[in-house]
Image 1 (cartoon, rainbow, N blue to C red):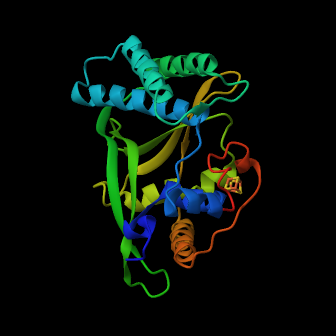
Image 2 (cartoon, rainbow, N blue to C red):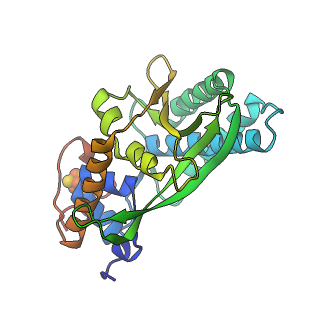
Image 3 (cartoon, rainbow, N blue to C red):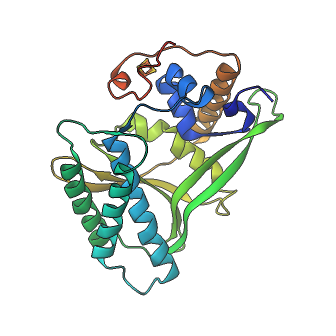
Length: 265
Ligand code: SF4
């Protein structure tokens, strides 16, 4: 036991690792001190509402593959998730040019497009949790903490190929560096065996809220070097947390930071 809630849980997720890499001070406030955020961004709420609506949609398709889900049901689920998010205890901060009405219209358009263009042969799982044991990258000794996460969707094509699909909402296309080194995708690659499909392929399906809305799919292949890099980064982040290494990383991430008032305290 290490004396603070984050390290006592003995697991770490890709989003926590990314949070540390973006700003160690924000990580400290959120996960070590467990401070309440001052607000929730409209973008985050939008992404959660899209995820929530699609999870319901995929669950219905999994339960009844031959019965199509009406697009109106998907849109109503999205509206409901947006509404619930807005009524939550944490106030929402909307971007000037991305208010609730605009995001609602964008989300409905993207989900309609999803319903009309994305086909699913066989859904194997929706929001599947995983837990991957970790080893010390130098000594090979098994460590106490596991890597944990939840994959949005597991599906199988008619030719037998199994896909782990992570759904994303984004304001711009992903660049090559992100696609090659995104730790979340690499961790999904590491989780394939524990999910029961060691040969599964990993992809991001991105719902783009660009001027002209689009849905793009990227396959994410990983080699031994990329797996080793992510394992090393996870290990070093945890060592830094244990050593109390936290510092403000000022930049674009400060603009919408929900821990700004507490930063540096
Ligand atoms: S305001 Fe900036 S430096 Fe401070 S915690 Fe937030 S992201 Fe980090």
